[in-house]
Image (tube, rainbow, N blue to C red; front, side):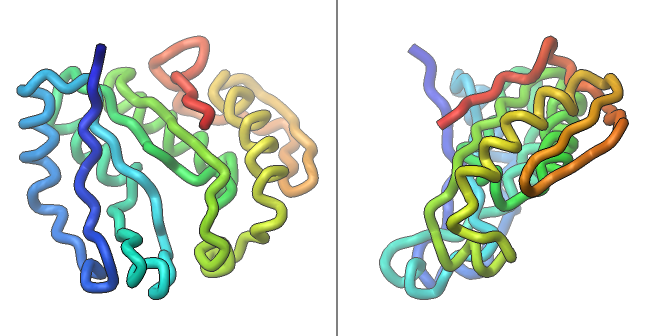
Length: 179
């Protein structure tokens, strides 16, 4: 059995300012304690009512995991989870591939569809389209990670003869945790 350490989130409305100071220390301690993974979730714009009911703030998972990658050697770096519909799939693929490259192949991209309607509105994404956006991301991610030219036409995203780098260290593609 393997365990992951989920980086603490600041709960409630009072947690609107996070101090990322201990993140590096916590990541190193989790690795030294034998945890298999270190994870962060994603909430770029949580609603005040949700926070007041016990919701939480988070640091950006890709920036934070990149920082943790520089301070650790073996622990897996996990987005638990990144909300795929919040991001253009080209940008999501680039962020994940960059994290995988910089960490020497330790990235695990956990993605989901999301559930906070107000957060979707705040980031300019149609909540009702989240499943279609998620499916399109699942189609684009592996194409992007090949490093080969590709074209894609979907309802929300189109690309013609694009070629993206870096390619992830993990091949054929980074581990994709679909939840």
